[in-house]
Every structure is written in C-alpha cells, then in structure tokens.
Amino acid sequence: MKDVKKYVAEFIGTFVLVLVACGVAGQTGGSLGVTSLAFGLVIVAMAYSIGNVSGCHINPAVSIAMLCSKKMSVKDFCGYVVAQFLGAIAGAAVLQGIVGDATKLGTNALYNGSALTSFVIEAILTCIFVLAILGVTSKKENSNIAGLVIGGALTLVHLLGINFTGTSVNPARSFGPALIAGNLSGIWVFLLAPLVGGILAAVIYGFLADEK
Image 1: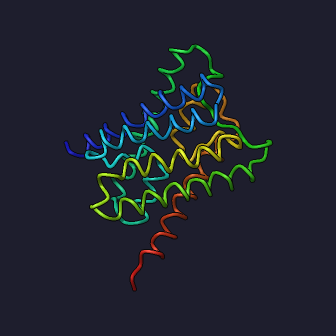
Image 2: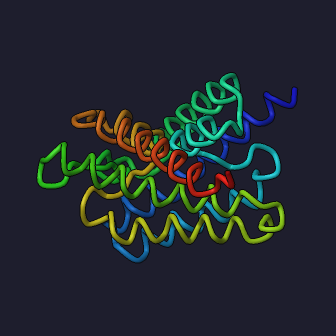
C-alpha cells in the first residue's frame, strides 16, 4: 500500500505541474518571468504537500538520477515514471478540456529547428536542475528549505531555457502536452535529453560528494 501511495503522489504532482504550469505558459504565450515563476511555485507547493510521501520527483529525469545514485530501487523507478507520464497526460487532457485550444498547452519546440542544439540545451539545463536537487536533499537538515531551493532552481533554468526550447527538463511534462496536442514532432529530444542530463548530474554529484 505504501508503494501505491508513492505512485499516486507522483501522479498527482505531475498532473498539477502540467495543468497549472503548462497552463500558465499556454495562456501567457510563454511569458519569461510569469512562466518561470509558475513552474517554480508549483514545485514548491508540491514539495511541501507530497514530498513526505514520494519525495516529489514528478520528473523522470529526477527519478533516473536517484536511481543512478542508488537512492531508489528499479521497481520504484519504473512505478514513478509510469505514474509521472500518466499524470502528465491527464493534466494535459484536463487543460485541453478547459482551454479548448491545442496551441495553448505549453508544448516544447526545437530551437531553430535544430535537434542537436536543443538536445544540448536541455541536457545542460536538466543537469543544473538535478544537481541542485541532489545537493539540497543530501542532508536531512536541509529538509525545511529543500522545496524552496528546488523550486528556485527550476525557475532559474526556465529563465534561460524558455526562449530556446520552452524549457522541458522533464520528459513527462513534454510528452503529456505534445500527445494531447497531437504533435509529437521532435519529442524524442525532450524525452532523451533530460534523462541524459539527469544521469550526468548523478555522475557529477557522485564524484564531488565522494569522500574517498
């Protein structure tokens, strides 16, 4: 039952992320400051509401970094990722039902049509974001401020990335809106690049934190 609750929490968290943050992005035309703040605030809200249940990953890139860091099992990783994708799809579907416009779902797009450039941007931004998560969650005494730090880090990477790709750094967040909008062109970049960034962050943090 405990595992089920964790997966449900991840579903809810990702659902809220897509519904609210992608909703803000779609309604404001991807406004730099407003959209960045929306994504950051959703993470803060979810961290302090479901964080004690699942850790509030709500992002496969975060989960794969935790898996690589041996902070979660393969079973939980699979359960988390499935829950995250389902939550993102459900969030996008509800958002579509509200706005009735597939162009206002906060989808991502390749920068200047370049898959390579977009891949590099997304991998780097995800690495920065996940490094912050790994660092702040490495000590129990940081638990009171972890949500604020993680939300701030997500806001930060959005401030740079929005004008390039719309900022994904989260495969589920990208897939849900793209699927409901019926436009999966270039989606592989936003599925794979954040995962590469998450793995890279785990490797870098593992090296830096190794006391040997």
